Length: 124
Image 1 (cartoon, rainbow, N blue to C red):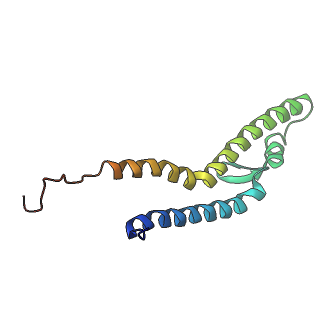
Image 2 (image 1 turned 30 degrees about the horizontal axis):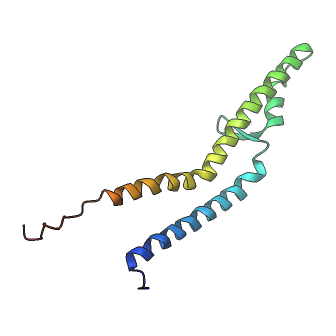
Image 3 (image 1 turned 45 degrees about the horizontal axis):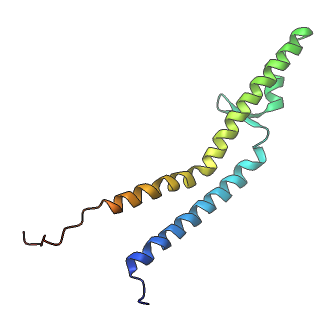
């Protein structure tokens, strides 16, 4: 069996490097975001916890108004928390998703790349 040409060896090597970079990115971002994943949410550019958000929203309320305010604030906090978690997951997975979208496009570009036919020479 003849040795593989540099062109055929180059493709998988680049893919292995890209996969390694993606894995490193995912590990680093997961380590960075995981500790605050369950409780942190961003309000007006400020990172806060769910409990602090609820306390800040309803600190001035007393009596029955406080109970309804707490219920509404907890619902809003859960919605904001889910949005923040979705952003975090997207940030972690973005390089892998982009690379998976790139692969079919690169394959199609190679398949449809211009290749001169047998009758075409350089001088023509």
